[in-house]
Length: 387
Ligand code: SAH
Image (cartoon, rainbow, N blue to C red):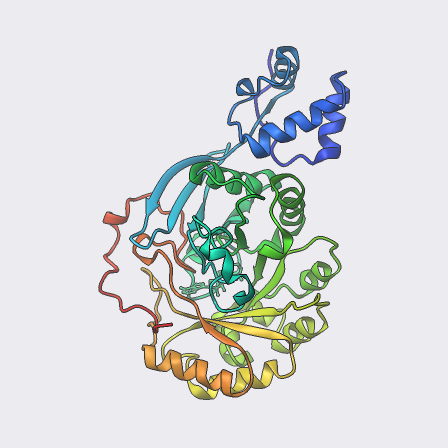
């Protein structure tokens, strides 16, 4: 009787593949062939991998292996070019992945990479596109302004499912790193630092096998302090972003229950102790919620908190959604907040919302099964402050 096909080749590293290949009595060069098929050809089915002999493919299938690539179940294209993918995994669970052509996935395009501006002169503005990937199905952190929170957490994604999202988008967009340079942000559904081992394994696979550069990746955390410390000790790691979102414990505790476990003092101490590399910053994200955390007095508190830290702040005016009881601040208030930070010597950027019309912007990922037309129209919502 054949075993069910529920083991995934995507997500195995070189050592694990070596064990598999030698266990099947095959020569070592098969490992590179499998890696090439998984990460460069991005095969969907073992039968497509004709570089491998038929008996090895059969053996792998009999042992329960498949490639394990997520299926692109739905694809929503925004008027600004952003694409939101609904990806389905082997067990039927799904998560969302976002493609942002030409910058501003949070890190690119915010002025921090001015030295790389020349790249945008190349035909496809290589080096400026960004993929935003999910680390969990849903999220347990329960931030009060985020749509993903309404789902709760279903499960962690495996390393293969995290890498598989990237491969699926690269395949669909016909992009081939490292020739095409892209940015990657772990800022989709879920809290990467609550799925730390799978997240880090995915990072290593993306660097070693997919050809992405660690300095073009950023992970964002809601503030899981012990994992920030572990992360600082990693040899290969993305840049660090922290979702600050409030200027004092009172407000942060109400917006982000996680603050009751690791308060601002512990969070900011961890950020201060974080071992930064040459020319590296910690990024703080700050979602501006009208009349909740967007006052100039809050900006002054933020400046105080971050004083002396090598950092920058990305301001995000609230992206609204059904069931989210906050309002988007006026452009004037967003600008005043930015000005206050800048006057205090803190680099602050206003993040341009991407794909709001298809629910692809920050905090809007929700495993939406309906088509965007079934969702309330967002066209009437005023955009965030001009950049
Ligand atoms: N869980 C991680 C990774 C997700 S990043 C984290 O919290 O950092 C998603 C970013 O979008 C976070 O900075 C979050 O604060 C922000 N965000 C969440 N809901 C939002 C909303 N409704 N509007 C704008 N930004 C939002």
